[in-house]
Length: 324
Image (cartoon, rainbow, N blue to C red; front, side, top):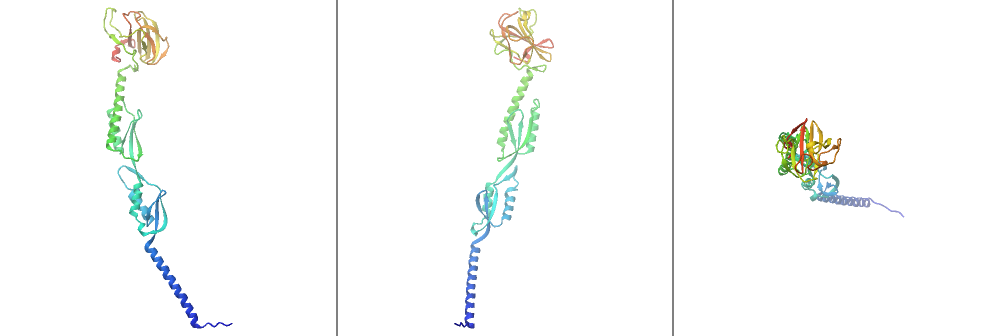
């Protein structure tokens, strides 16, 4: 069998193919045009695992984040933290691209971390927070000057907090730390009053009682000025060491009756007379508040009481300069 291809048949087939190609090409162009009109290459933005929107240019958007959020210089802000921002390339509906909205969402998720300055004392747990180092230093200098008698050990520490401290909070903290320093100043004054030649009388010799004879008084039962302080109290009441020391003597001593003498160092000694019972012996080391004897009426005495005496380098002094 023989096929005969003429020129007209070849031209027809070629033209048909060309027309089909043209149609396909036009269709592709139309489809691409429609896609490009409706959709656009963009970057999906995620905060952590949450997708928050789309931006056209990742590099430019990151610059916006840095300039308008991360590097924004607000007062007292040390730095800004945000969740991890990640990007993925996509073709998206043009209407979904809104960089301002995405930027606002990033800003909403950001946290300002404020630098504050803590003023604290090694003697207590109370602290003051202020917003600038200059404020902190001025307050420390002021407190040290006002409370120079107790030389407060104040230090400044830089802290980073999510919340900025306000003026009301600062003032409340200032009042609190001043109250604590006032209490320590008063404690020091009281301690100074009860310090004899460097020895602190930390304890009263008796709990309760009434002063029945003062230092220097002259009464019919003695032929000399009273060298101590008499405190009337019930028989057997515990007598306490007023300060740390070592018992120098404990026994009968003429008009004192049963007497305990404690040596506290620095030339300071305390006497406890007319005891009904002695609970220590010479050489015993005692602490302030330790019970050393019991109240009685031994020796030259007209009733149950403690004769308490303080001596400095052998000379009696008025106990009421320091206690009672």
